[in-house]
View 1 (cartoon, rainbow, N blue to C red):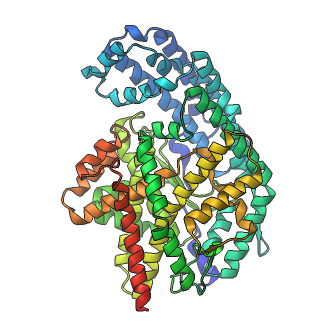
View 2 (tube, helix red, strand yellow):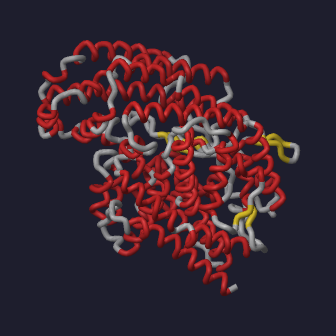
View 3 (cartoon, rainbow, N blue to C red):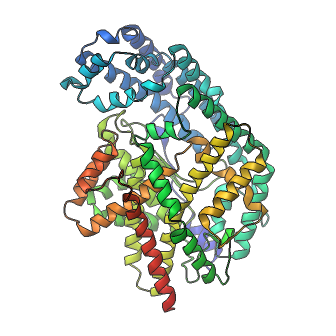
Amino acid sequence: MPDASTADTALENLPTWDLTDLYPGMEAPDLEQDFQTAEREAKSFAAKYEGKLSSLSAEGLAEAIARYEAQDERLSRVMSYAGLLHAGDQLDPTIGGFYQNAHERVTTISAHLLFFTLELNKLDDATLQAWLTAPAMEKYRPWLENVLKYKPHQLSDELEKFLHEQHIVGTAAWVRLFDETMAGLHFPLNGKELTSAEALHLLSDPSAETRKAAAHSLGQVFAKNLPLFARITNTLAKDKEIDDRWRKYPRPVSARNLANQVEDDVVDALVKAVRDSYPRLSHRYYAMKAKWMGGDKLDYWDRNAPLPDADDRTISFDEARDTVLSAYASFSPRLADVGRKFFDNAWIDVPTRPGKSPGAFAHPTVPSAHPYLLLNYQGKIRDVMTLAHELGHGCHQVLAGSQGHFLARTPLTLAETASVFGEMLTFRVVLDSESDPAKRRVLLAQKVEDMLNTVVRQIAFYCFEEKVHNARREGEISAEQLCDFWMEIQTESLGPALRYDEHYRSFWTYIGHFIHAPFYVYAYAFGDCLVNALYAQYQQQPAGFEEKYLNLLSAGGRMKHQDLLAPFGLDASDPAFWNKGLDVIAGMIDELEALGQER
């Protein structure tokens, strides 16, 4: 076991981000100037265009959209800065106050712009069709098509404006309460008070006693706060139910699918394929792991435990950086060059610290700036893979930035493609560099576990959300019912080899995606299965693949998934498509079974 001081040294002097590329500080004159400019421009825009869109030529509409885009980008820059500052320290009251005030000012200013998309959706089909086919609208045609998709779900102007302004004291306020509550929790363990990120990390500790103690500490603290988390969940689920009902969305997931530019039946096919594969994937793997760990059952705190023969050393961030960039460069020097910018500049916030948002994310900010990455790096191989994942997002966001502010935004169905592909590239480099059969087996098992976490676990999260949102339509859900839903879904997805205790019942409370972005989670499974199919084609036909792949990333939100996948000969609407990706995971488990028999 490595010396603790050595591990601590490896995690010293980790880089933090520098947000001055957005604004020099909360009191910066540039920031206040942007607020004032945004308000002035928004009022001017409304005065020029409100009630007059039907009289515009295609050229005039393109000019109006360009002006609207510039204003939205200015406001997005402000909120990106405020949001990243808050993510870095959610407990600082000064930052919290700044974040809330910025949100309120942006909401007030953007209310002047709200008419634009609402008025577009009121125009007659003949006018809209003429615009859509006009050469002058070539740049913004995909954006306008996406706006028009919401026409059947649009409410009156007055109600839309009310909901827009009310959001900051409704949904956004409850989300902030969740974030600040989670950031403020402390998990006692061995005389220390840990953050949630630190405590969750210990579920992968080499010591079974430490894993169990961390799991019980997490469960006890979550349980103490169960009434609050149940209230937040019930309120946000009811808020969504009201919004869905008024907008006539048929299912709780329908709004998410529309935003993701994906058909309901495609998502349904993905969910069904994964659930049907539980026995050959997660059930089979965890039964194997239980035997490797010396029993017929696997305690839930051992689900991500390192296997015997696992490399327990602490990996320095410099080594992680070099590993990931080397993997990217082996596929595409251009992709590696984009990735290197994040390290050569202060675009990454790496260390864990009290008050910092747990987990990891990549935030695109705006094309006139650059993305930022947030990690909670603790020096294990999974942290290296997380770096590869988030860097993939960052590279995708940089490449898509050429499409401009509106069309750089990638639908969630494709948003996880670059991140999961980056993980796969990194895993293959790490695996190919290891010659010891025992260590190769461990690396392969770790990859299988990561894929199960990405596919099986995320679809299980989706199924949990379905149960919650469907039940909330019938009335308030008790904390006990929420815990029952969680246990039912976990038992189904992870299989009979897992053993639970009462402490695990409250683990649903820390999943931030349930709060921040309902039904986001299926995008991870979508991306993993898609990348498995893409990577298999890359291995079979590497010639020309790099160019097609970078074109896919550079397209941003300009094209739908059918068009982007067509050059690769892939079709996500084909029900058999998902099994191609799931077969890759099953094949790795087959390989592990064979290796186990050789021991």
